[in-house]
Image (cartoon, rainbow, N blue to C red):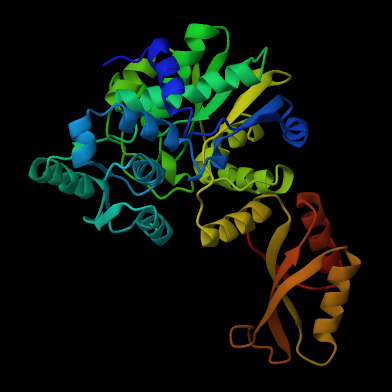
Length: 404
């Protein structure tokens, strides 16, 4: 089934009462670090924290009365589940969500709090989907696909309409790609209204669904790999989404997990906003130099969601600090006699660095019982500062083993 500009405009009118028009403000700090003139479309500010509300509400409102009464079902461990649960409650439509066993606890409890029936079934998404299909037949529920249902795609396309209205004279929109529903909807809207605006997709090197489909000429399965951008790890791009997007998306690039972690950190530090890995991918692509043609161009980044587990966020920030050269760890051999540690600490301080954590290792420090290994985690300014710190410590006679 096709999705047209008329479908997307109708979706915008349909969902207007229940879905926020989110800001698309210019970011001076992100522009400075990327060389592009950056605007951030902050759909992480939706009530459930992601763009998925757009398609969910549109699809729910498009149901016939009988289907609304019986209810809907989806297999999802993420933002689609949240969007359906929230708008199902607002519209009085029963929602069932089937989640695989690895679903994050926060997503489970949030969906339940929003009134959805949550079923944990299966070891992976395929098994969860099989259970959902069984319930469709057994209970007469309507299955709503998270990224390939035409009504979902039309709903997501409303984001593209908003970007064009909010940012005149735009040169490009950079959007994450997982299942493809978001970029397909945006591309249909943008290419119909302003075909000169480039639509660029970004994947993680650990996902690559759209790139694999382009190589094969059709959607193809991509093995699931652990990724910070879990919203992009859909195993395959949708058939409808791919058909709509393949000739409308101008370029697709991939970025490493390290760059995604660093982009999450930059969004927290510079934009004062928390984003999930998928939402950080567009910024990561600019920072990593994957889109040199966008230098000095007016570029909108689709910040698609902010639902990141706080424990993961903490680890991601630390990974970003390491990648950024602002956190380093090394092992130094020092005297185990009084004053040995003080001498090392003084040398680190004199170099302008700050000790975050230190641990002694006596059991594996070698044959010299008067010496001890100390494992130091140290806060630094950047990578040149790390190099200067290492030189200073070696000059003071401390043998170092440096972690990379």
